[in-house]
Length: 175
Image (cartoon, rainbow, N blue to C red):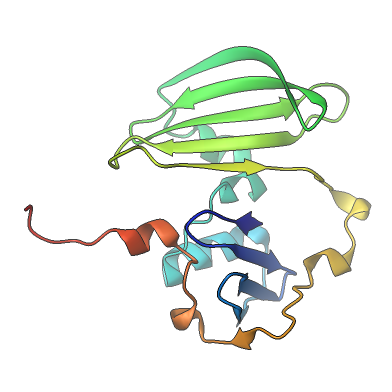
């Protein structure tokens, strides 16, 4: 998973270690964490306050989690993402609007996901474009090795950008 915009962070997980590199800051961190992808997502959220965009797409129960608070949905027809014909669907919850483009055909899979906050000024949104979705034996262990190059290792608490939106908000009295 790569996040760009305010920061440029790549995060990998191999079932034993979560690794993240801040490419534009040339720092990285590694967190020992054994378990499933769901365990990793839950731990990053609860222990470190990290909300990775589109993490729910990777959950074992993706459909149930994503549809949990949906109040409206609409089929927006077909679109082309990365050269593939996709079904374009839009959904609304109390706090967010989100859209997903699912590849048409024998192997449906997400091709693009956009989530927009309805609760923040200027309605920031994240878009994740998926170009090489693999499952099962098509996934090589090397795909989850993070190349750190000459980046400096830091503790997770010192890793800027893992939750770039939270870092922009400050609690306090209304001005």
